[in-house]
Image 1 (cartoon, rainbow, N blue to C red):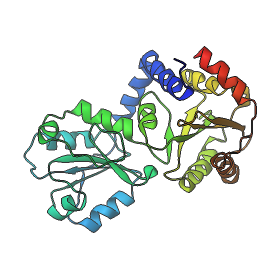
Image 2: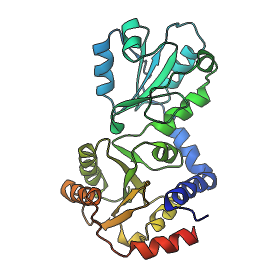
Image 3: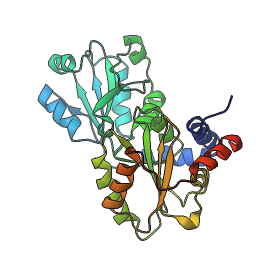
Length: 284
């Protein structure tokens, strides 16, 4: 049976995960970085909970009916490992009822995917409740891994951990900016790219691929691009295997928006992908 590019691309990324333990180790080290200790915010009402979630790109909330269960200290411990994630905790019955919580649950909310929340060990846009025994047996490693995988943002940097969450997302169109983070234009380009990402919230996942990372060369070559052609944009739809690329000497909100709009309307800048994709299927 012939493999589709979406399946092959996913397997390619997973293959890279196995080949890049050093990269994965760096991710873990970054999440363990030393900063001022933070504590989860106590959410005592529905308006406070809604405001808390709306203000964060990624929010993790522990909905607990009982603060004496073993999962609570695990939750507090993990808070210190993710300084760029907002953590909340609530025992308020109205808050739990608002989010249809009937037992102890830890949920992750992310704004770039239509404001849905994910329960531990699930990666879809449905509200799923864990059994009490699952929460009570949760440990630091499992909870940390869940947060690392599913912390998708307006712009998510590609790495062997976040790629799992990207491919598990219900959003089927991915836009990749392939650019060297050491470039003098990087900061300003990312500022514009981030602004453009907000225009396509819930429609397109915006991803940064650092071309300065050796392991990312496989991602760049997948889209038939050379390092000399970067920075460049690549847009990819997992459902029907369509993809397109655009070389960008300068990243601007207008160019990104036009490129995305054109793809959503079925317009392609490159007409030679069909033959390349057939070859790609065989090679992969």
